[in-house]
Length: 427
Image (cartoon, rainbow, N blue to C red; front, side, top):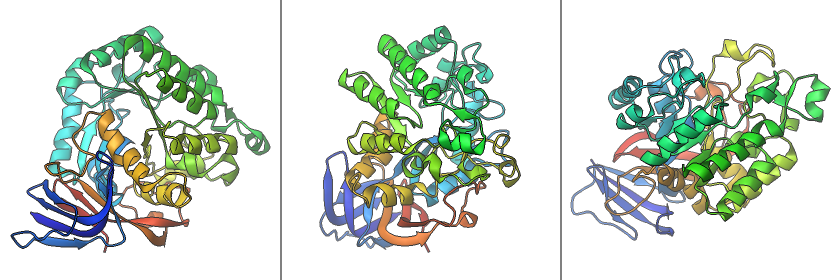
C-alpha cells in the first residue's frame, strides 16, 4: 500500500528532525521524508496532517492484556485495538496472566495469536520465576529463544535476592532488560492507597513511599553488580527520581518510566469510595508528583508508559480495600501527555516522541521508534489542539476503569499506521 502524509509536523528523535513536511511510504517502509513530496505513482491513500504531530509509532512498554486466562477483562485483540486507537503501534504484554507466561510455549501462544488477530505489534514479556511464586527461575533462556523482549515479575517483586540476581545475570548475558515492579511485599501490610493525611482521614490502610523506594535501591545495586539493563516500571515517588538520577550520573544501565495517572493526579484528587482511583503504586502526594514532573522535564525519566490494567465493572464495584488495583490507559495516554505535559510546557513535543516511541524502542533493541528513509512505516498522527471529553464507554478496550471519565483534554490521535497499513483513523 502507498500512503502519503502531507504537511504534518514531523518529529523524529533519532535525528532531531522537527519540521513541517510530507512522508511517503510504500510496502510498509518509509521511502521519502521532508519537504513537498510528489510520488511517481498515485498513492492509495493521502492523509492531511496539517497542524498535527507526525511521530514514530508509539510504543508502550507496560500493558496488561490478561490473555491467557483472564480474557473476560481483556484479550490480545481488544487490547491491540485499544492500542491502535491510542496511537500505539507496539505494545509489550506483562506476564502475570493465568497461567503465568513462564515458558516458551506460552510466549508463542501470545505471539501467534497476535500475528493472526492484532492490528499492532504485540511483544510478550517473560516472567522471572515459575508461576511468579518467587521460588524457582522460569525458563528464561527458552523464552528468549521464543522472542521475549524482556523479563519481569510485574505485579510483584522477586523478594529472594539470590534468585533475582541469577535472573539478572541471565538477562545481562543475553542483553535483554529486566523490567522491575518495585514493591517490598513485606511492607505492604494490606495497604490500598498512599499512606498520608488523606488515607488517615478516610480510614484506609496506606502504602508508604518506602515500599517502593527500598526495592528501587536494591535493584539498582543488583544491576550495578550484574551489568543487567534495569528498567524501573511505574515510578511514583520523589526518592525514585533521586535514585535514578544518581544511577545515571554513575553511567549505570538504568532507565525509568512514569505513567500518566501519576503525573496527572495526586492522592488529594481521589473521590472517596471510587475504586477507579485505586492503582499500584498508589497516587502519591503533590510533592511526589512535582518530583516526577521535574524528572520528566529533565530527562531523568526515559519513558512514559500506561500500565494499562483492565478490570470488570463488577470487580471495581467492590470496596476500596477489596477491589483490584489498576486502571486502563491505552486510550487516554496521548491526551493526558499533551494536556498535562506538552501544553503546560513541562516537556516539548520532541520529548514526547522520545519518551513514547524512540526511547522505548532503544530499551528493547527495536528498529522502530524512528522516521527515517528505509525504516518500518510505523507512524502516529496526533492533533495537539483538538479538544474533547474522555468517554470511557467509547473505549475499544474491554476495561472501562478510569478516573478520567468525563475529563476535558487536548490531543487527539487522528491516525495510527503500522507496517504501512492504517490500523486506526479517527472518523
